[in-house]
Image 1: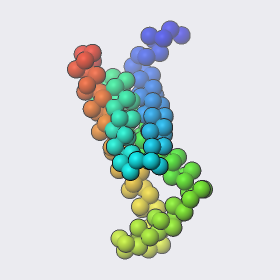
Image 2: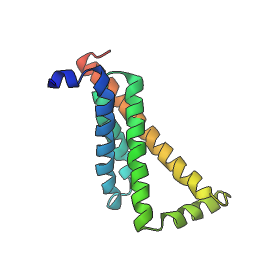
Image 3: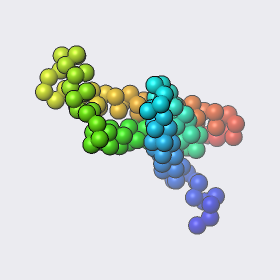
Length: 134
């Protein structure tokens, strides 16, 4: 398969998703040393959206890429740290009992996905200005 043919319409979403997920996973490692590392999720989405040819697919690639990266990050952290206890404390602050920690984790993951999706839209629109994409 030719390289140019691989980067045609049917593969750009997959490439954008993978680039966003990998970049988000790597950039999230800065969270241990920098409090505002979530801002880097915009950059991760930007990279993925820059590669996708359509705006809607670009948003979806950025959204799903950061969402998957944060889910993996939360799953890994749940095995090595007290994330469930922390989420229960936060859920208690909002008056959620029982499975309230699930609401907290899902809302954080959705917010991360929105950050990545909006970054991907920015990346797509910058690429469409620079390269005159559809």
